[in-house]
Length: 280
Image (cartoon, rainbow, N blue to C red; front, top):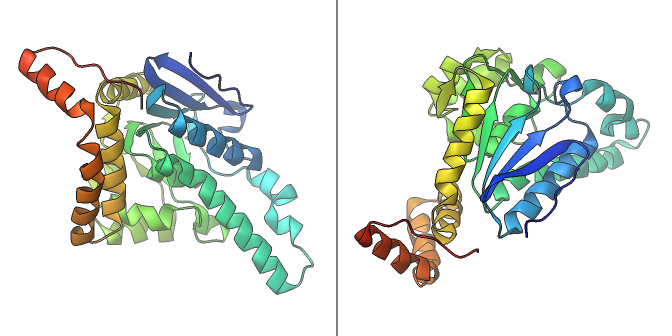
């Protein structure tokens, strides 16, 4: 029996066996985030990570206008961390803000930490925090009308939830990263595809979501030992030297190669049949 996922600001549903669709659900505010939402996000992805009934995840935003326009600025101004530290001693205010930022970073990083591959489908306005979120995903797709921007400098701050750390490792040009982060300019789907931020561009949101779910179904049909190991190794090797990556891979596969999935997959290939794999 699959687990029940019920949240105020997210819709979570199983679209088929092993495939989960997570939808940000605040369309009247163009999916702008308030504090409760990033705590819910972490709860969802921490649970999905450990749920053996889940093998691949698709993340989208509800409504037609936006995947996400970043933080809800009005809510942040009235009840955000800056309002809570006004008048405090600077050192104590800095400590409180640092703790808040680290907690926020940890919640968004739950997508990257999730053991299961996450495919994010972007559409409409994809601004600020939306870039932080999509940078944590494993595969990024978008519509041809998607408008991207790293907006934080226009709000008087450096982006602090992950974009500045992850974006340079996703795309091939550090000059381009500095261009979009320092100017906060808007760029479109064609530029995102050319620079490598997204893997594919589709004509409509419906088509993009459909293709994302197809990607997820393909991944979910494969050995969860192999898929989850591949995600772990790719992410670990990204942040370490080649020599360290090779050594870590040898240790990881020293255990993973003992899985029955290896022989099942090989025999299925020889016998021209589709393999099935136990839950992990």
